Image (cartoon, rainbow, N blue to C red; front, side):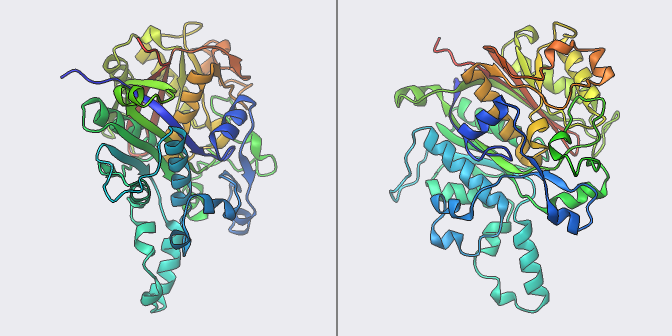
Length: 426
């Protein structure tokens, strides 16, 4: 069976440095960081007292939720995901389904990592106090893993697949590939794909306890996230959501939709926590295999890739990731593609990272630029020995990329790589 062409017709994002696509694009073009000091983390004795999280007024939620939905809403991941998802739907020129019949050819695949933590905490106290009947009817949809896809699926009236995936840091990229495959094989015409993650101390506390977060930048937070830097000292925790409206080319052309980019394919795999892989470390063989399979499945050659949006978290594994890209693509030095990491600007948004970073990747294709990495002027010497300094931009470059590879590698030794291409009607 020949696979259908699949395109992206809508974008939505709620990021630490921009709560809509326009603000987000402006921020990544100009190197604006969304990482800030959080007094609450100081009060709770965190070593790392900074994070990247979206900032908006509570009244902003009235644009996305009705009064009943807002009653007792206490799940930041639901908020982020709904805002990004609805924005992507509208951005694609789609209207809300007001009929009693579901949209049978439209679905939602929206991933999540940790969801509804604050609602869980609220519920736990009530249960322990013997006030279980005071939980109300909104506790379950806000705390169940698939709460975000259920919210979006109901708001939009989708009648095709409505589900939530969860694969740690690979979640968002995996959701995009799940949507791509579903549409390419003719099982749907439109899928809202993306991912979200809660914010707050109950989400970030475990990472602080693992001592993998930077603690020397509490007074200068925008300098803390340092992917590919010699002075990188851990990832900055973040949160938010990204969403992409993914559609068959036939459907997009039929309704005259704006097309941001095309998805050529990709691959998802696991290193099985073998051969150096663990809960927190990658099996390099699996990472390289994932990249190579993504290139092969997309029908391109490694030399066709103009840029890479890496996972690159600002840990000791950054040089390992660069080496894996070099090995998988057979490219190094000045031949290596441009490479950047959004985490220098927003931190590591956990399960939301892949989708937020994919929005950034698609914007680069559509608007002809490669955003610069901040905080890596002191390039790690191991990386410098593999990739020429000019390929790791510190300032945004006006450039027209044709193909960009985006990859995410997550806890549990899981990998996902998707290949995006500038749209051409031919």
